[in-house]
Length: 370
Image (cartoon, rainbow, N blue to C red):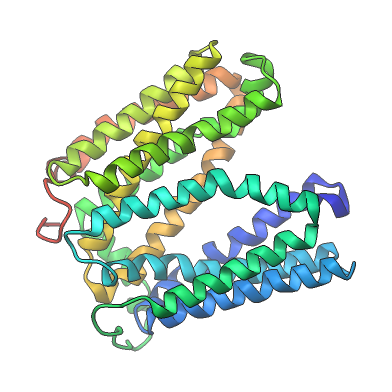
């Protein structure tokens, strides 16, 4: 898009086109995931994504790609992703046993981090060779994912189709409100991400505070993913079994402390260490939240609960970057990140009092009470 228009505005519209479907379709997505075959939904979404990226590849190769086509195709891909994400999350408990779910969640997180680190590098390399090759490669990978989900062994039966009513559509929100452990886990992660948006200000830190070049910015950007990858691989081998509530609060507190250290650091090495610690602590809370949400939700409600969870966490990522930018404009870059870290610690203290059942949660499995 930027190569075609040279406009940051249109570049921003690409992100908006991906975000809007998730925000608008959340409640519909959850109801569909709880009423139809989840594997079929995921497979259809991946086919739409393969078709969309394939169309981008073809039009780019023929020199007919324009900004309107990009926005329309990206919007369609965003709509497919809106259905795919929550449905895939609700499908995971049917792929592994309850005992193995925390380990599976950690492996999933590690795979995501590997893709986060390796994907942009490979994408940049392929783009240097051929712009259409990037889209074609993505299309082939979506098709491969479609084949893999088709042959995966699914346990249990497809969900029963439910009559569509306003009550059934909003059932996910009602369910979360009534379960203190799930509500506490989702909201704790939401506010931690919302307040701890230090990574949005990394370009400013790299250039004006730490005085590094593009290489330094690259290392700063990769540091959280490296920390998250290391911890997720550890959790895949040594999954959390006991005192998960206290561990989650501790992880979010470490996230806040790492944010504070990064805010005041003038040492490039110390800043890198703080970001590695930030990423590692974040993935601990993510794995615990994902496990709690999936294993303490009945199968017939998982789609709707996962959709609400995805909307709040996804929205908090966008709003977190916005919050960091606004506070940086008002108070300065360092105070903005410092305020976010202190705010995260304050949320941890407040949430321990508001959600005592989450703080006392011992095991991840469905034996925990609401």
